[in-house]
Amino acid sequence: MSQLKFKSNAIYGAGLGLRASHYQEVLSSKPNIPWFELLADNYMSDGGLPIERAHKIRQNYPITLHCVGMSLGSCDPLNINYLTRLKALSEKLEPAYISDHLAWASIDGQYTHDLLPLPYNAHTLDHMCERISKVQEFLGRTILIENPSSYLTFEESDMTEWDFISQMAKISGCELLVDINNIYVSSINHKFDPLHYVASLPAEKVKELHLAGFTKMDNYLLDTHSEKVHPPVWQLYRAAIKQFGATPTLIEWDSDVPDFATLHQEALTAERHMWALSQ
Ligand SMILES: [Fe+2]
Image (cartoon, rainbow, N blue to C red):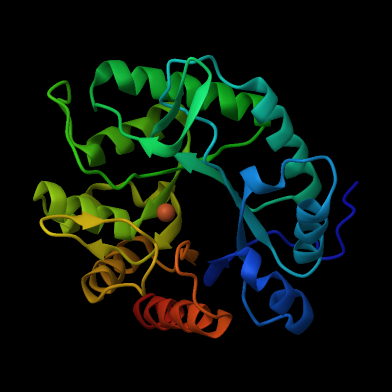
């Protein structure tokens, strides 16, 4: 039976990624934020300060658990130790969603700190779908898969990322976390129409959106999560809300993290767009 005082795990509106530098402020002032995203990998220990804090946050807010360690695209066996710890965390915190990425992060049991890209073809589609299905079966729930930002393409790819993701959702039964900033970054790097990407996704599968700031490099965009959301990403977000409706949205800011008030303002801006366009 649930040990949580704050029982609801439904999420709506614009939430924030919980950052260590904001714990105290969030716990003491209890700001009016509809939900928080916790990076699951930081809270998988049996005890200690991180999990204690996660419990305190969850006593006051609905949460989602975002993962970087499933390594779904890898050829390594699924990491049952990781999934067992994730399942236990999920049972404690009762998140609205659990998500990970269309990516791989390990080879021969060695983990990188990066989410690495996959070629998009029938072979990798089968591979991803089989592993997503196994993870969903293990956790006893559907998971959300997030689209990556990318900086290279493969000769072995013979389908677009949006077709791959749409088919992956259909075959595996997973749902989608659509990162609007990632679509925009990749669209500039690979010269495709980001509006076409958004319009091609199955709206009924889209359960959450991410927004973040990129950094402009000499001849490409880099997904740094270190700035405010840029105007063309807000524009694409508006198109996404028109297509998907009022979808829970997360502001991601991981480097050069600003004060909590600045982060909160970004979430309020997302909500203004969301409610204005989804009436
Ligand atoms: Fe994201």
